[in-house]
Image 1 (tube, helix red, strand yellow):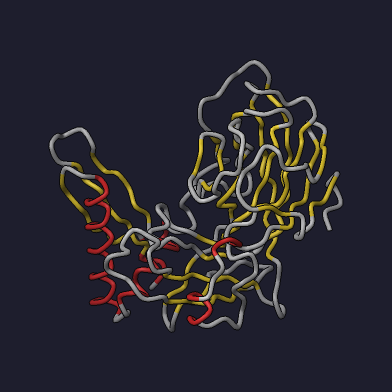
Image 2 (cartoon, rainbow, N blue to C red):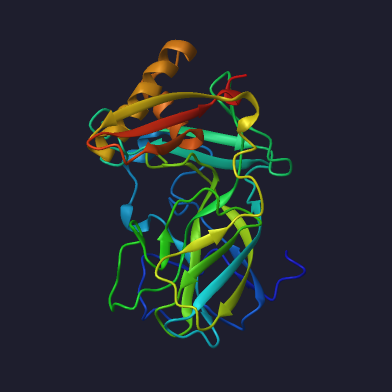
Length: 319
């Protein structure tokens, strides 16, 4: 329970996709603090005892549920919703934190290279959030955040939750963690804010398409800013964003060429090859590990015709 929260949105109070005709789950005043019980991105279809066969059986109509929507009193089109993110608390299963990472065929950066399903089930200490074990030797530092967080669109009808949008949504920005303040454009009366798709950890890029997908309780405060229209989301972090990974430095691979997408694929492929050689990982294991803790970065974009994309893998995972 959250003693300082004004409201709670329970796990069953969720929806799929964005639609400004959805009936609000809650009406909240600006400045109120809300506890959201968020499901993982599978909507509970994958659990601590799931196998790779369950990946192939996923019902994609139940993917990425988001809790809400919340109608914020006084919110009007052209306003900004200020979201102050307070905390993330794991929803323990059998006394442990739980998460999963999967290679889902047809989804991810390297779909042409990894065509078969794969699954890694994670366990971690829900109190300490110590690094989670991957295989026998890798330990991934955790940094919980919400992958999907946003407001309803002005356009009528039902819109998929998968692509990120100008009002937020499936942003998958791993720095939207506790202490961060997020600013979202408001396009409909009440904003109709929702949040879900919580993660225990993710690398920048989420290259295989999934992070450590994990259910969390999220506490945040919603407020309004009037008279400062915003075209796209922006956010402010409370301090450094990579110190949970920085201690041992990084291995980095690059992709270079005239196309950012191809260069990104080459950079990630190079890291997978390196991890297979140096850490004796299976390629799909290396791919999933890259997704949960490696960072894809644009290193250079102005020296035409070629651009440089780098992939940073934290050495702390193996040291």
